[in-house]
Image (cartoon, rainbow, N blue to C red; front, side, top):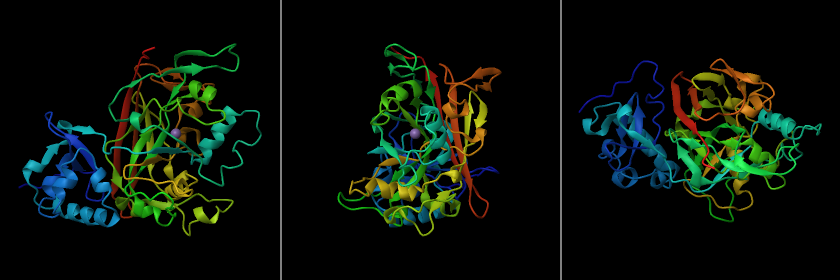
Length: 398
Ligand code: MN
């Protein structure tokens, strides 16, 4: 038995206790938490505390645990906090540098929102420059979204092959097919649904908290040239569906109780099915690094719509959700230029390059590496680290 060392300043202390999936030495995948720089095997450490810990955690994904529901999540988190602060079997512990981290969840459906007013207004100005109103008339009445592709959600560290697709610029005589020339990021948070709802029922905004299991960092890769040509009138598809990247650790909502904050303000008041007595956002700070240089710090607290309203909206027509569903927030952008969470905004459609590594840059080049990080602080000052999602761009195959 041993105790786990937590380095000073670590954001993986007992206030965090995220969930992930690891393997080592080519062995099977198993669930873990992270404490300091140590990966802690859940099936082993919870063996004497949670009777079916083997079924839940000696498992390829977190889905069985997600499906258990809110009361079990509370029970397991309490047992885990107790276990990792005492003596722990040495066989449960591995240095994080010596394991592989995998996708935490077998994702079911994926919906991507558009919940930042700053981002939506900036994109409106860029995509519809002749329209005096940057937001479309529906934007403040419902959280706008599109349905994405879970089959191409990949883990941090997985390279991204530049997508190919059809595009036609405003001055091009005809469409062409080829490698995207405007490959971009979208810095977002992803919310993982633990327990869903039956078809024909709705999850209310008040109930949503009991259904949302936790949060990951989410990079919604976007090929702006493909997107601009395809998106009218049915919305994005191939400009997005080639890849989305997620961070390995799912920070449970239970760790974020005191990270909640009021929304910036909703005017007009949403219709009753989306209305909340105290609509909450999350005070989470993101950081976007491009080839080792921080180019943006998007603040999640600026988001217009609550995650609870996003899930309520998703189910408000009676659509079913399932354990492992994920909905992402949409690009997180604050009011300041260096708070924009996509390069199309940061460089104003490529017209205002940013300097990275001494060179003027607009969209992504082959060989570029993008890392997105996120952190928060609890009310008592404990740092919550969401880890990172990092990706390298490889040349197109077409
Ligand atoms: Mn997006």
